[in-house]
Length: 196
Image: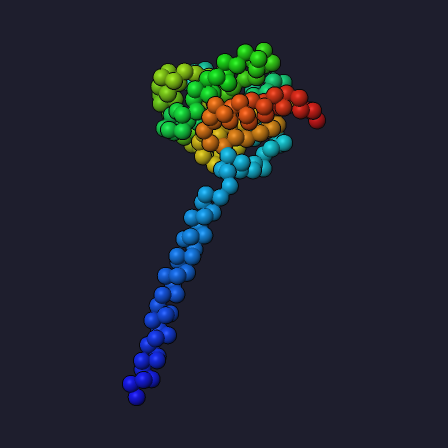
């Protein structure tokens, strides 16, 4: 009689570990997927499309950033940043280098800033301490413009053709290597893109 209850308990012990095994398998799968792929290569549905509408206030009464600024016939670089964003501080010297690039300046390239979920005072302090590479800064205090532009998280940088169509999106902090090997070539490519 004691053999039957013992046999019934063994399968129950095994089943007690089944949820733990399933959780461990799921956790391992999620961990592997977390590091799979390059986050800077996230696709954007806006590539080739016109830039979403923008009507953002500027700093200290200066004119803000509008989508009309992006349709002036010159290639624009729109950098989405925040004074509260540590990777934005890391990439800032590379934005300064991009804005100071004499060849691109001669070709009419303009760098704009879109300050996401930030205050004018904080942005002013940030640019005062690190330098201001932007021709204009638009304040996106509520983050609505960032949502319209499909921003995953700051920093992100967009290359916009002279007709206002988005040509390229770079996700994450722009390193010197990314500037030289990806962003700058995409700016030059956008200059030669045929216009519809």
